[in-house]
Image (cartoon, rainbow, N blue to C red; front, side, top):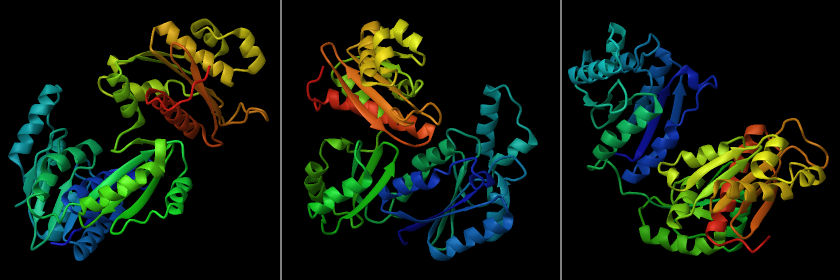
Length: 415
C-alpha cells in the first residue's frame, strides 16, 4: 500500500469563512508518526455531486482516503449516503452506537428522536469506530487494496477517533517507515532571519529536509527525514541548535504558556499579571494550561489610568509625564502587580492595539512590556503595525517570551 493519503472534507461553513478547517493540520501532523503523509486536501460543499467527485478522484490517486463531515442528524448531512452509493453498500443501524447515544442523551435529560438516530447509521460491512466524545461513530471501509476512513466533522470527535482507533490500526503494518523529525519553535525572530541565519552558516544536511512555518509570534523549523534516518536528523539538529540560539523556546509541539508554566513549576515560583492592551489575554493563555493554579496567582486588567494608579500603584506623575504607553509605566505595572498579589514575578503589557488611538509619537501597534522580580525589572519595546487582534496576539506571545527568558537566566541585569 502506498504512503500517500488524501483528505476530503465536506461542509459549506468551511468555504464561506465561518469555520476554520483544522483537520489537515491535525491529520498531516499525526500521519507522520505512522510513516504516512498527506498529499492533498479537498474541501467541498454539502452537495452530492461535489462530494462524489472528490471521493472518486481521491480513490483514483491514493490507497488511503479520509472523508470527514456530514455525519450529523440534519438534512445537509449527506456524506454517508453519497459514499454508500459510490461503493454500492446499504446503510444500516449500528446498535452499539445507538445504545451509546441513548445513554448519553439520558444523562443530558434528552430524548433520542428519529432525526438524532441518523447519527448511528453506518455503511454495511464497515468496521465501526466508537466515538468517545460525540454521537456519530467513525467507520473504516476496507476495499480491494484501498481503505476509506469516514470520520465526524467536529474537531474534538475527529481527533479522538483518529487517536483511539485509526492510528493504532495504521501502526499494525499499513504505514511505511516512520518519518524522523526534529522540531524547533522560535520566538522573537522573523522567518527570513531564521532562514538567512542557517543559509549563511551553510546549513544543508544531506538526506534531511528543512521546512519553515510562521505564525504570529512564533516560527516553526522542522528537520525531517522521510526515510526515517533518526541519526541524520539528530546530527542536523545538533548543528542547527547553536545557530538558532536562545530564540528557541521549545523543541516539541507546545505553546509558550506551556513552556513558561513548566519553568515556573520547576522553580516553585509564582506569577501575577497586569494587562492593559491585551485585556486579559495573557491570563487566559496561562490558565488554559491544566494545573496553572500551582503558579499563577491572578491578574489585574488595568485598562484605565485610574485603575493603574489605584490597583497597581503606578505613579500619577509618571503617567502624566510619559503616558500610559511607556516603558516607565510598564515597569511600574509589573512591579506593582507583583507586590499587590505577593508573587515572585510580575508581568505587564501596555500599548496601542488600534485601529484608533495612535499618535505620531505613539503609533498603533506600539507596545511596552515588563517583567519584575523582587529586586529589578526588565522592559522591552515592540511595534506591530497590524490589526487589533494581531497586536494583542503578538503582545501576549512576546510578553510570555520575556518571562521565559527571565526564568532561563537569559536577561541582563536592569533596574
